[in-house]
Image 1: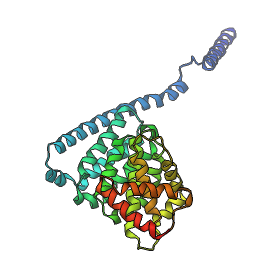
Image 2: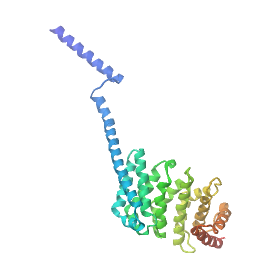
Image 3: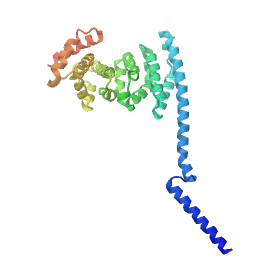
Length: 302
């Protein structure tokens, strides 16, 4: 009887040793291993759920785009509502929290496309777009994705929206962080993105220039001097490798407007003035008219 008990004890020890060995070798499948594998199962479930949500969002966005494309301008303007804008904003918010799969990227792109279609040439929507917070989300998306992955589609709704804003409304974008966002894009490998970023910086500077008195220094200039944006603009100004020369021209306009009541630093003054003189004959009426006014202001500050 005692011998049998000893044998049972030895067997239990050997069994425990085998289990211990299997644990060390990674072959043991017990409660510990199962608990470690649980997050993987949960992760797969999350991915499936995210994929399903993305599919639903993409279907909705396709529906909205089809509807807008078939609408007249007046019908599209009526389509813009707080609920629709918040729905688009929520899609973008969700996409930021999700793993950046191809479906998630597509949700971001299509949401931006729909937003652009809603705001283009639509001055009546400005107030509710600002209040909806969707512009903040678009800026946030642009900030968190890789610079090489930022596309024109991401920027277009911002650009088109700025076009329909008043000078005062454009200046609201400063608090939303548009300047540092656009400064980052000045390093984009895509010239079209650089051009659009420069254009938006110029629009904000123009708004500040218009709001300031004749002899007042623009508030935006203080900001761009302090945060390094002015230095980046000068780098772009002096970059002769751009195929699109309008990039350099818009930068010259931006810098010229920044120095409304102060002489432009001598290091790049002549280059800025030379480009602005050339822009006075530009075929784009906005650029030529601004260039003429900026040039007149610069002459007073010599």
